[in-house]
Image (cartoon, rainbow, N blue to C red):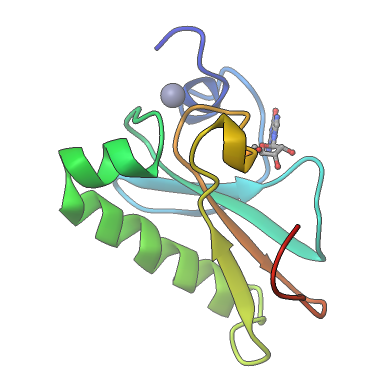
Length: 114
Ligand code: 5GP
Ligand code: ZN
């Protein structure tokens, strides 16, 4: 996917502040953070959204979730509570169509979200 921003981050063609990496996943800070901890966790391979990822490879879905939890522990937000969000589809606010989990923490998080 030549025109995909997050594929370019994986390829190191676009810089990002990487905080965690495994063989098939990458985690980096969001450039427009909505909380003191706001990290995006992606599979290195391109899947447009969470549904496409789960359909294609549920083992990789598992790896992305495990990476999200590892990030929360590293960021020291796991004890107080944190949020893992997959905006799925434009109607839910998805703007980058390479699946990513938002890991949000470090402040009080209200529910329901807007
Ligand atoms: P979405 O709206 O698709 O759920 O989330 C996309 C996220 O990507 C947004 O929170 C946005 O701030 C973030 N983002 C957009 N462009 C970049 C970028 O170039 N680098 C990084 N690290 N994050 C980005
Ligand atoms: Zn991509």
